[in-house]
Image (cartoon, rainbow, N blue to C red; front, side):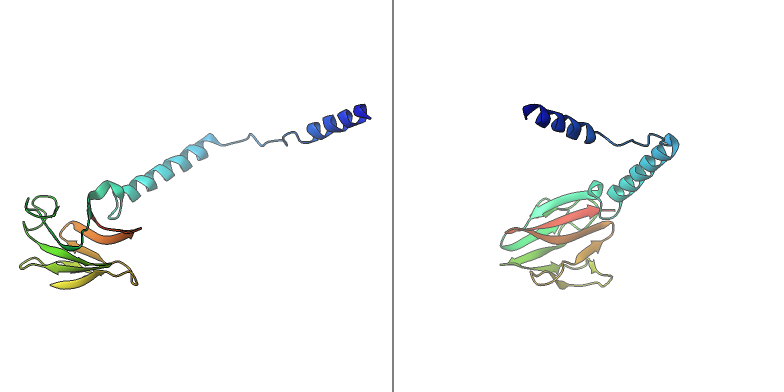
Amino acid sequence: MKQSIGIILCFLLIGCGPAERNTDIDLGIYKAEIEEYHQKRVESLKGPTGWLNLAGLFWLKQGINSFGSGAANDFIFPSGKISEQAGYFLLNQDVVTLNVLEPVKILPEGNSVKEALAFHPDSTSRAFEFGSLRWFIIKRDDQIWSSVTRF
């Protein structure tokens, strides 16, 4: 009996061996596919929303959060890219309002605004632009932050 079980197990193990593999791979095509993937990945990383263009991540606190290129702001944007004091985000519980100071013209979706709803839990986040800067508000768990990119 033990011998028959041993023989059956041997046949099962032999039957579970790897199937024939097709080893005819065209290395030229394979290398071209890898190169195409790398090129698309680099383009994605350098694109307007890519991580290589990230200029800052700023956690918002309840109340007023000023932004601009000046050192006195809560969020300091890249120097020379925006006014020293461009405006502020007002965080009231989970709602973020963007308030723009004159003469800065910040564009959400192509329109210049002085005040705009930047984030509400029940709606999608809006992107804001000034020159080569773009930023939007994101909520992760209980933290709300502003992501700023340069493109």
